Amino acid sequence: ICLQLPPYFLLLQCDSKENFLFHRRSDVLMMTPWFAPIVWEGTYNSEILNEQFRRRNVTVGLTVFAIKKYTVFLNKFLETAETYFMVGHRVNYYIFTDRPEEVPKVPLKEGRNVVVLQVQNYPRWQEISMRRMELINSFSQQRFINEVSYLVCVDVDMRFNDQVGVEILSNLFGTLHPHFYAAERQSFTYERRPASQAYVPRDEGDFYYAGGFFGGTVMEVYKLTKKCHEAMMVDKAKGIEAIWQDESYLNKYFVYYKPTKILSPEYLWDDDLGRPEILKKIRFLALPKNHAAIRNK
Ligand code: 2GW
Ligand code: MN
Image (cartoon, rainbow, N blue to C red; front, side, top):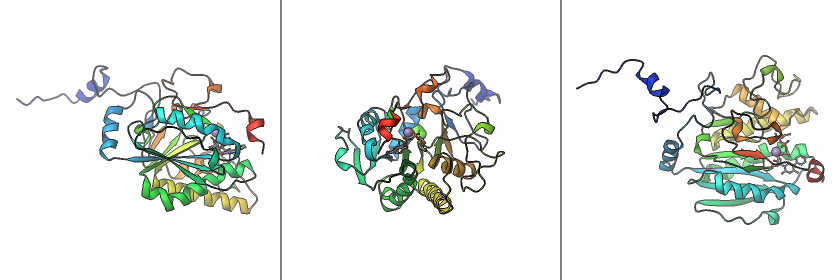
């Protein structure tokens, strides 16, 4: 017999906690007005997602920069990534460094590789941070496009603290900055000088994204890093540097090229902000750093 379901069947299904399709939260925004999912714990089914990405035999590239003293962060970064990052999937770690001899030998699980890419050092820290765009861009074209499907580009002064899996993957994704996920547009620290290429007018911008966690397909990351690097070069020629360096240019990009997925601050947290109730998981955590000691040349 043919069972005629009432039109509200789907709603009922979603409202039942017993139902395997129940993946929603009412305490956080789960989708942007341009229909990009915002990834919070409790809003997705990792079993289904893992199966989809395994079937495609996807390889994920994780780019990280460890210039000068920042090589001290690599050990904890890699160790915790082995425990939590893309477990069960193929991973290439791309470590950009000026000190290849300081890259620790961390035991890796099957299907996971470390690739050390030697790069030059820049005297100014702002330049070290900003040049990441240029380097990711040029290596995307030369190398990443042949080796991985997606790139995940992160800060190194961090540790993985819980699962970061294929739920983050999409054509183009950014992460809500932990200081601003609950803030209003007026308080976002976009670049506000019209002379800068990173300028965002007061009445524009959707979210404030973190510079320390973004990614997408190699093609999308290629386009993003190209635009950001070019904008930086235009500014540099005029003697301007955006207020939060690469983060400002990234935020400008996302105003006009909107991400297809957004990660909640679970994916870039800082314990200086405590641990609010809405955070069911803290997946990637800033390490306290002695700014004076680590940042001196
Ligand atoms: C040295 C002195 C001062 C600041 C940074 C550095 C430095 C950074 C360095 O000596 N060597 C190095 O490899 N880095 C790389 O740049 C490293 O990958 C690090 O994670 C990244 C960004 O610097 P970080 O993590 O010290 O700055 P945060 O945590 O304040 O980063 C936020 O703001 C930055 C721009 O000012 C970026 O947008 C970053 O993505 C944000 O998380
Ligand atoms: Mn950092």
